[in-house]
Length: 436
Image 1: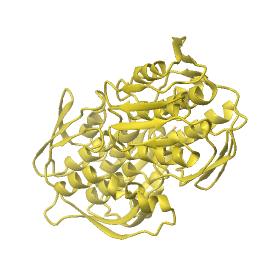
Image 2: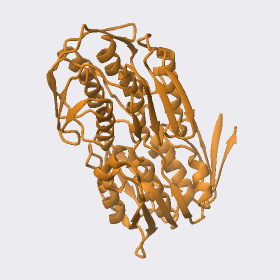
Image 3: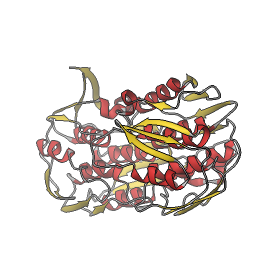
Image 4: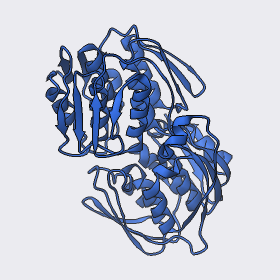
């Protein structure tokens, strides 16, 4: 077992480069299963535990995957095994994303029900219902989703609730279906726009991504394509908070600012100065056309008036993301006044509150609402990560705390942040990884 040890009190300064988005890279990797021929190359892929998991999943199906730095080359022409076993899927909910591509290309799939962070119920019934509307025969047996179909048929599908992975899965299923599929009440996240752009490069016909209505006209086949993963908006937001909570001065490069409007607005209202610098040069024509996916450089500091209390409500995109809730909460523990945080996405996403209380935070939880009263200082303490984003929040708290903070269950952090402590150390933080 490993732990992250942080000694607080240092102001961060310097530059940090944001990696590719985990929540974009995972569906992009799954989408390569749709290619009958060729080798797909994905650039700007982060080196994460979840990425390694889905790569192993594809390799187990017969895909050939090679990695050089931040690039993955994936050949799926020889895939024959349409099973996603429990041993891999249990560690990462995003493994469910292979269901749609397998049903689309092979007309069969056997995918274990997913696992992942224990932050609340995330049922896959909407995935199953959509595939059934497209003509698939679906059963759930012994913990596995088992699907069969001759060829999926286009359908008019309305999601009961907005679902990101459901939108991605059915979008991938529809690209090879016979006829037109319309996804209504679809999720609008930038990562879905990224996936649609990659599918179009493979030969898919998709319109309306980034809106609540996506139209997909099925084609006979898709071919491999090269693509660059968009920057990670959650990692960028996390480092913005790191700069603010440490009272530092940090330049964050490759931040997808256009995809972060809600986060940037809230952080500015809390008291951070976020100054866009000149856009970074990018040779990819797609990024020039779609600024939502492009990275720029920004300078982040704390304003002269300090941190102020603010109410935050998590919402589906373009609202404030639930994946930034714990980081925002940590920042507000040191803000002047009382803040109210409402979590509308996941019912169990306040588990980090108890660990922050151990560090001296004044937080009261009432159902899905957290009342945060700002304190003068946090105090270092042994803490335990409960999920991916909570782990980042606890490390951020350690940056501002007096004394030493030791966070266990580092494997949660490694699922979503590549070299997090190394990047913080390069900015001047006193942080290290140790073996227990």
